[in-house]
Amino acid sequence: MTPGVISATRQSAGALGTRALVVLTLINMFNYIDRWVVPPLFETLKRDPVLGHPSDAKLGSLMTAFVIVYMLVSPLFGVLGDRLRRPRLLAFGVALWSLATATAGMATSFVMLFAARATVGVGEAAYGTIAPALLSDYYAPDRRGRIMAIFACAIPIGSALGFVLGGLVDSHFGWRAAFYVAGIPGLVLAALALTVGDPLRGALDAMPVAATASTSLGQAYVALSKNRTYILTCLGYAAWTFALGGIASWLPSFFERVRGVSHAQASTIPGAIVVVTGFVGTFAGGWLADRLLVRNKQAYWWVSGIAALAAAPIAWLVFTAEAPAVYWSTAAIAQVLLFASTGPINAATVNIVSPAMRATALAAQILVIHLLGDVPSPPLIGYLSDRSSLGTAVLIVPAAIVLCGVFWVLAARQDARA
Image 1 (cartoon, rainbow, N blue to C red):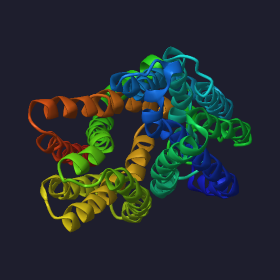
Image 2: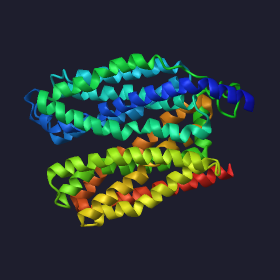
Image 3: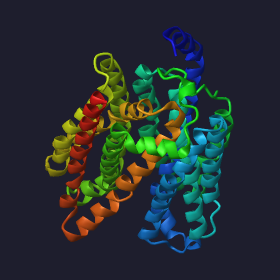
Image 4: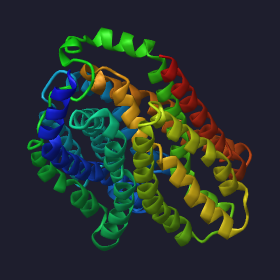
């Protein structure tokens, strides 16, 4: 595509791109509200005789079921997202996860509740694979870092709102109402998703769209398996997800059990930290990476890799320092640095693959990062804690962060050589 055509396309896509960014980011926020509305309901669910007083293991399986279904179904929607009209698939996904969340409020047994939460994973798989790919086609490669960062800012905000919403509604109206309040608005958002346009795939990329339009599924996976930069990016993202999954699952227990922090503080302060640090780190990382991209084409990986390597020793202090002023402040700093990579790494992923197989690439990435990341990390930390102590077990988190940074630095070098 010639520079003149790209410039004209950018201008025509500007207003539509802004609208798509607002709509998709709003939906992404509810995406994470629906994910994280469950943990604050655990104690109430455990006391409910209708559900059979489920054990902690069963309650934990509600989260595991979602993640496993999410990562296994994602490749299917990756294929569909590269071949069909994307707004319709997005609307289907949003409607499905919203209905599944609301249906959980009507559960008359634990099995029904479990099935509803597993179904949420199907709907969110459609959204998680397709939305970033669609959004990338509205913006040129040199702007995608900050655009993906804005889109990803919904993650910490939605996660925190899920906890708050679940806890507050449960306290006043019961756990069933919490699922209704979280799920029903999604039906309106599903209709809103249909109003988002479906821009031409690769219209703002340097490669001609026609040259990428005939990629088959087999060709797509072969191309991804040979793309060393993509593989290294995914491995780094998996280590990042491993670390974040461990932090999200065990940080409150660590503060309460190891540091003697009160239950109320251990439950609320980490969530408050995530809201602030997640927003600041995500937005700052995307903005900085886009600024540096003018000077270095591998800026997305360098910003992410260096931020992760800087976060590792600070995360070590979170788990080893005994002074409250130190472990609270280092927890905030470490998470700012970790969230700084969210926008750049997603932008890097869509930039290094053909526009015709972006959804497939994102789907494969989702499968890898969860399979190697937040599926094994919480139980592994629990296993190590049972055999030593929680204070020792959580030290694998800084090690994972180091590995994350190393993979992304290697990805930057590999891309420079390609």
